[in-house]
Length: 154
Image 1 (cartoon, rainbow, N blue to C red):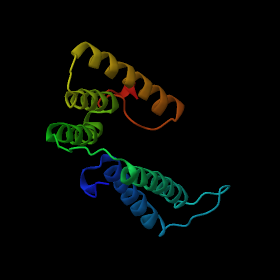
Image 2: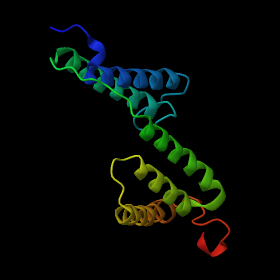
Image 3: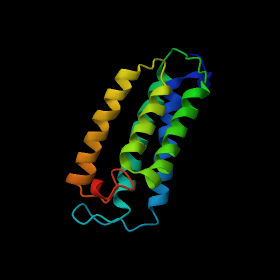
């Protein structure tokens, strides 16, 4: 059995899930838990953190037991572009509204992939924007401006 565990992707993914789940559970300890019928603010993060820990433990054990190694290399371009997409969404949402923020986020996120086809990304962006407006504004009735500065678009 190869004992070099640093190059096993399942083990590393499992440890990452254990870390995130553990942090969520520890942070949630400061909030009232409640019950299943009357959930407190700590209920969801605690349960979600526990589920992440279970998945992380499963993946870690699977990674230790697997025989194959995986050479892990980082490509910083997708990481940077996805981070930029999230930051752009927050920046544009406040200033221009929901639809411009979604369009910018989807296009920048699509640039992080290996293939970028403008027509496919445009169709995806329009479809997701229509779905987001329907769900967030009309179903959930959240007070987001569709396009800022246009009072009839609220």
